[in-house]
Length: 318
Figure 1 (cartoon, helix red, strand yellow):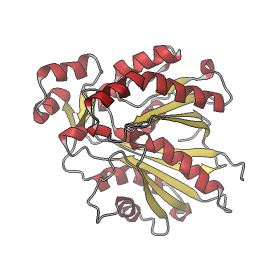
Figure 2 (cartoon, one colour):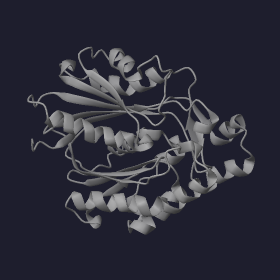
Figure 3 (spheres, one colour):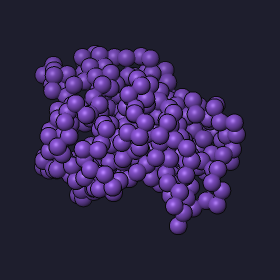
Figure 4 (tube, helix red, strand yellow):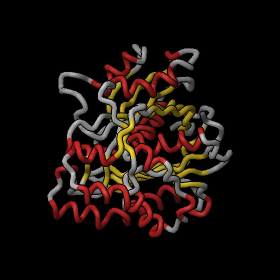
């Protein structure tokens, strides 16, 4: 097996310009004012990006185009992985990954979706991309990992009175042994019996909530151990934007100071499914807050349930 490590050479992010206060979104969804107040005061949400004029293909392609247009030879992209939370982002007659591949002008790339881990599918797709590239004889080939989807129903927009979803997309140019930010480890914890996702029965919702912090802490611990570092060595935790309240509980359980976690995008964007950790990482980069040699702990949780964590070492990836 090749020893070439998975590398994130570039990360791009896109969010629609149209921003909606959660009060306006709550009124549209028929939420009572107490639920909306809970989302703002407890979970930390303020705005939701929502643009009806942009379809899912344009949303995802907007991030991918930022990377593809800068490649001297787009033909090096052999794989396009589209990670999304909802199993069916389009009618069954439409292959969303293939449509996006064509929109990006990558006719020779193999395109497929990664979705069974729901919101944790983005991190899984990076891991899958690395394995595919290590199996290639040509070290110059690349993979493009894409995220982004549109919450099209009220049930999808608001999950279990815990989080509210917005729109964003990201793209990661992945190599094996290339230059950029190195994936030091990846770990997951799977909780069985919860495959109904947003359709969970009330007793299973309680089980999910009761185990959330402990299982996420377990995934984080495994990722840190596999990276060969200690928790104190982590420069910053780069979370999914599901809820500031849940994250405060989780940080206390894990033992990471709240000052070492990035929550700046929770009020700006709310929860954006698979895109969150990459969106947050790109924001930290754009704000000049990624330190050379720093270790960043990316996390996500997918209903079902999959708890995922990835340690990334910043080495100048863009």
